[in-house]
Length: 176
Image 1: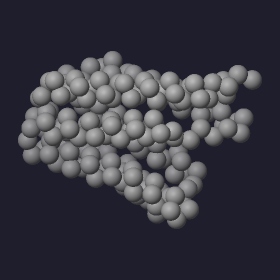
Image 2 (image 1 turned 180 degrees about the vertical axis):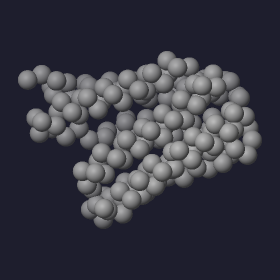
Image 3 (image 1 turned 30 degrees about the vertical axis):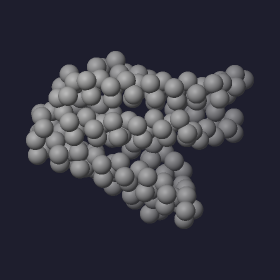
């Protein structure tokens, strides 16, 4: 197993700890929330670190290609689910994110047997970064409604834009 993949596994291991801390915070600005934020930030940083190591040291592997995006999605969706539970983020926003993730994954599954690899595009990376940063801000300032709504809007907009872009650029993969 590569170093990059080991770092990705660390990110996956952080997710249950993050969820417990978020749950214990109850959505309030307290030590539990700050601890959850710290874990989320560290986990988010491992996303950039493992990608850098994989590219720089030629450690790109099929396992890493599978696990890295899955770890990102699980981390982000776990945070969004907690915000939905507390009524801070509407469930429809989470549903848009989930729908985009399933749709892009499905597109990649259809493209793969045709020999087409659909790599992460710039808009997908912007979506991931803005979502992770936005969720950090929501954890740092819980209970600020206008801020939560603004961040939710950014998350939804970047999610929709990147999803549409993936389909426009790879539309031909859907037709035989």
